[in-house]
Length: 239
Image: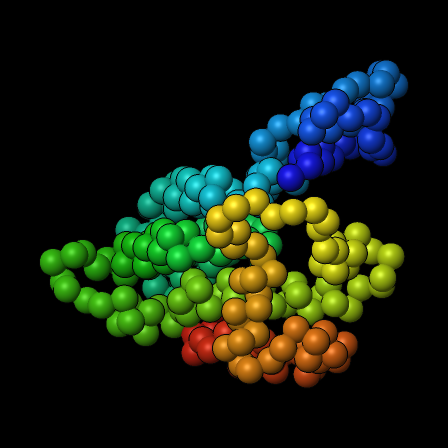
């Protein structure tokens, strides 16, 4: 696996290696050299970076923060004098923005997508004042709010990020990471689903190969049309 890269505020460089344990040094606040050892996960710019590439922990934290933000706005959701369209706009700006921070980089699994969709529909139901006794489907809830499924919203963000990276210069780190092929033997068993596999599934939905996507992304207008086709949503949400 190699070690998790400990991103420091200042310039980092690899100092030494002890077996499989990578150590990094950086200039501390007082100008001293300080050592950061290998860790299983760390927080960088608000996102949790895991050693195994999983986004489970990051999604769990995002759900908690978004739920906390939603709870602090209970007075607004309960206010019957406010039009529900205004409430939806506030939901998009104050809750969805927290939930989907960094979502374009998540290697999405079915289990995590179900957790996110459940929270998304639960919050919409509360905004509309719908309870379980009303027996209203999620499709009807989305029709009333005018919002897309969270799966479509995240897919749109993921493909927009893919196009952005494809248009980067070759010396940019995200572009190099996207094209990097790890060396060495693979471990036994099924590999964990990664981000590239998630995006490849998105591209398969519109019958596009990775190479075709790379060419299409060079033209922003063409790529926007590709993203719209793959997203497949009918709502107006643009997060």
